[in-house]
Amino acid sequence: ATRANQPPHVLKPTPLGRALVDAYDAMGERLNRPELRAAAEADFTSIANGKKTKAQVIAETLVTMRRCFDVVQRDVAKLDEAMRKRFGGAAGDGPAPDLNLDFAGTTCGDCGGTMQLYSRNDRPSLRCDQCETWWPLPDR
Image 1 (cartoon, rainbow, N blue to C red):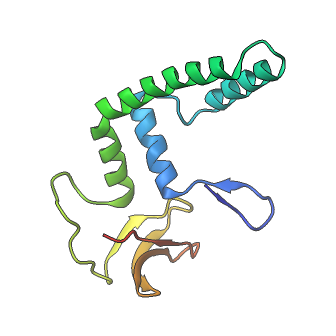
Image 2 (cartoon, rainbow, N blue to C red):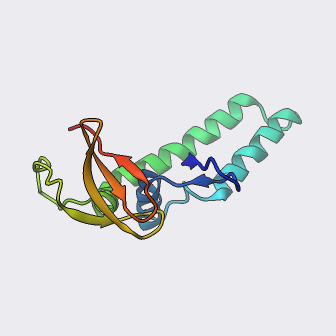
Image 3 (spheres, rainbow, N blue to C red):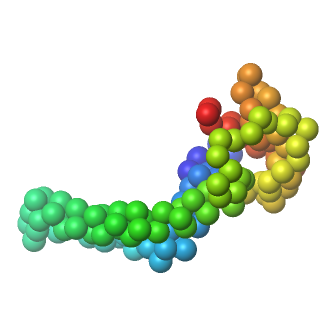
C-alpha cells in the first residue's frame, strides 16, 4: 500500500496488493483480512501478560503460515490468474512482447480510468489519464 500525501492520510492499495487480495480470496485464504492481524496482536498481548511465551507464539505462527504457504503453492494458478487480470497477459504467453507505447490497455485500479502506456525516465510505465497516477513497469 502507499500512503496518500493529502488528507485524509489513508493507505491506498497498490495494483500488486490488489492482485494478491484477489488471489487470496480465490484460494479461500484469509491472509488479507483484519482477523489475522487481530490474532497476532492478541498473541503479542498474551506474551506481554505472561500467558504465552515468545517461543509458543512463534511455533503457532509458523504452523499457520506453513498451512497458508501450502495452500498458495497448491493453488498457484489462482495467483497467476489474478496477476494476469491486474497486469495483462495470458497463460502460455511466454516472455512479454515488445511494448507498444500507443496501446491503451488496462483500467486504473484507483479511479477506473483508462491506463496508457508511456515511457518515463527511459522505463515503460502505465499512467492513468484521469487521476494522473503513474505505475512503473518492472524490468524483464
